[in-house]
Amino acid sequence: MTWCYGFDRYHVMSSAIPPAFSRVAPAAILTGGQARRFQGRDKTSLVVDPAGRSILEHQIELLAPIASEILIVTSAARAPEFSEGRLPAGSPASPAAAVRLRTVLDAHPGTGPLGAIVTALDATDADWLFVIAGDMPHVSATLLAALAHMHERTGNDATVPVSPRGLEPLCAIYARSARPLLAGALNSGDLSMQRALQRLRAGIMPAGDVAAHGDPAILFRNINRPEDLM
Image (cartoon, rainbow, N blue to C red; front, side, top):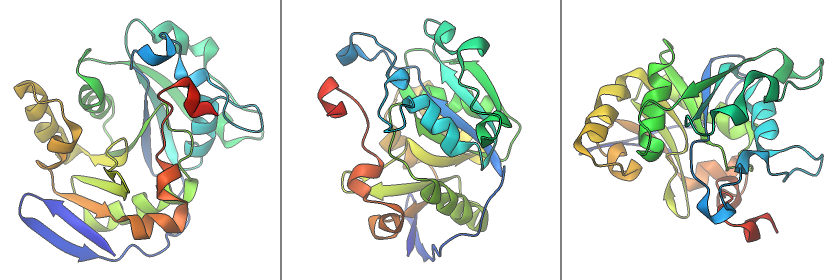
């Protein structure tokens, strides 16, 4: 079952196994962090896949079958790392070869994921988009499809899964209707994504439903330190 969250509004909704989705909306991969614990190294280039793919390559392959285009949201300082010639293209037979990749400069540098999400919403005319952190290599395709299925049925400002650590705002869906509310938080100087979600009418996929698509403790695990690669 799925809780809808927003101020004092709560209701339960079914999150049945979704049908197949194809190119339903853009996706934004957020890559603008400074990665201080990696000495500034680009975490999206880290190889964590048994097939030898980087996190970015893996995420593009993951998103390509369901994304109309993929936005790489990054800082001006890191933009050269994601120039057209350096973005992975995938094999000719791969879905990644057919999806458009676009690098977007973060319009709100220094404001963390909140500013990057507002930037992504401003970079597309779509009604909603997927958002995923660039250091999150374990998200499953079926989870993304389930979030899309839930979002299309509810029309909320956001659709967000839950893990044992709480809401996961960096593996979620944000609608255009969320933009003014997120911008309001940004302009107030409150950069907390958790508090920003409290401004929104958000459909919440609880951990029990998330578990149908993988272990919630692993799905949202991000790479913060070198030891996280072990």
